[in-house]
Image (cartoon, rainbow, N blue to C red; front, side, top):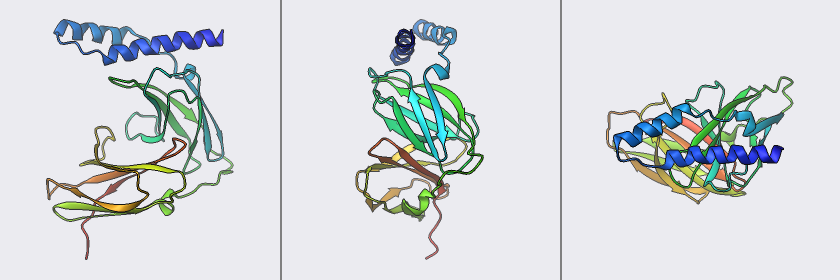
Length: 235
């Protein structure tokens, strides 16, 4: 029965994803799509994935095989409000169990983002995982392990980084001129080098620039740092 339910839910999700992928050129088509999205009742997030916590480790169990999709991403924050969410993992769609490492004992809210081959993603959640009330976890300040510096002038921002090479897969730098929301950040640099430097050329010398880095490890875990404001060098 559980397998049958999973197949039904996956079929429903794929219909939603396919609907989001379609591009209607006419206003009538757009209205029809809007009606479908409004009328559709998304499956409960608990039917899509579940969480369990042991100290700093949160185990994510995905109940649906999203193999027809591109990938599955895990996002989290401490508020349960879908803004300022940090990417915690990016895995292949057939991966059903993976782990997140939390930075502290606080409770967290999680979303699962299903990314189709084409078109818009679908979010499920949030689901809350409770606090580590007894503080049994071994919490690590990742900024002390994954070190980087950021300085700027009127014309450019300069990054220098040096990360442990073990299990390192890639790093992406993202930028925005405010931190009210983490969406629509611009990707300014990507690399598979665990150490190096790069320059981001700025268009407005009077604007404030905020940066994030997302370090992807071989197991799909993503270590996100930021937002960090690019400050002018004092030298």
